[in-house]
Image 1 (cartoon, rainbow, N blue to C red):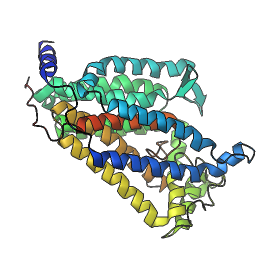
Image 2: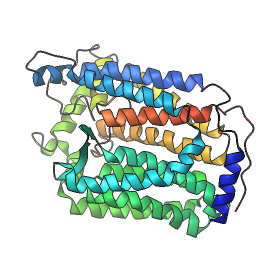
Image 3: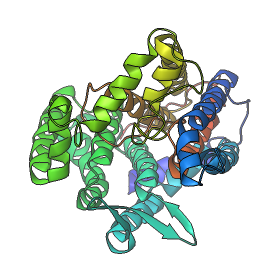
Image 4: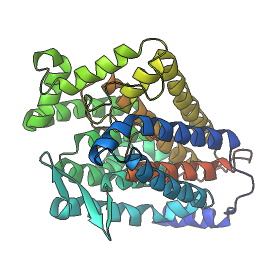
Amino acid sequence: MALERKLHAKEDLAPTGASTEVDPVFLFLVLLLLAVGLIMLYSASSAQSRYDTGYQISTKYLQKQGICALIGLAAMAFFSRIPAQVWYRLAWPLYAVSIVLLLSVLVIGQQVNGARRWITIAGIQFQPSEIAKFTMILVFARLTRIFGSRAKTFRFGVLGFGMALMGILVPLALEKHLSAILLMGMVAVVMMFVAGSPIQWLLAGAGGAVVFVIIYISLMGYAGDRVSAWLHPELDPGDTGYQILQSLYAIGSGGLLGLGFGKSRQKYLYLPFQYNDYIFAVICEELGLVGAVLILVLFSLTILRGYWIALHARDRYSTVLAAGLITLIAIQTILNVSVVTNLLPSTGIALPFFSYGGTALAVNLGQMGVLLQISRYRNHRKIQEATP
């Protein structure tokens, strides 16, 4: 407690106002990703939209996503002006709220395929796990500052972070939300590494996570079916292997230059979730290998610039916070593309800024606002924090 009071006193002396403009390069890349994502969402969802509206409207999903994009942009602008120290103080309260929301899903959540993941509050439907990802990153960044050099010890670098992580993962396990568990676990490992946790313990933890996933999949039948479909989709082309095969058909038919924007054939109700988890398959079909690679390059540039901001952050806390936020985007992108191309079994993880999903888009844009705020101090002298 004495250490934490000392750190609080120090950050109160630090300047809290923004002294420079946000990083224009990162802002441009994020806005470009959003714009391209909305354009491709329209193309991928137009057929499904017409079908769902009796062939009257082709922009049903684009309109909803556009509203969430505006909300997200407003959040990004607002968060870009909130000092990182404010998030330091809010980390534990938001963490507690996230756990309550995750547990409430088990009671009032909507059940889909045997799993509860969505709740509706005040007429707004959202996925609490999206908020939990953000709050977990906030807590890990705060613990990094509190632990300091003690993060290199087992007590703090493993048990300390691990206990905070389990507070989020246990409710997710009860929800049968394996994809969120995998995603948060990967982000946690990266943040622990940046914080200074010894690599041998992180590798041991990764081994334990693999064992957990194997046991979890063996107990959850639907997840086991996904693995079987991943390994041999051709054995059940009409059921468990259908989505994977349709995705590969879309990718293969795109060729080098694609069929042309809006000319996808698989989006006409052949490929399930063509505007959500599998939107990258439609991108490959319409824009071809060249277009898909350009979009991946755009993601790569955004992610690399995010890490650049983390490296040039003003203090250790901001560095770890920025690294966690951009790692979340990076891992989501890698996992989604890997699933669509059948390099990994289906995980249910969306492609950031592209896949349909209002909660995810708004939260992602808000998180980019936090990164933009951190980038305001990229040209400042780093603050040397006290070592416990």
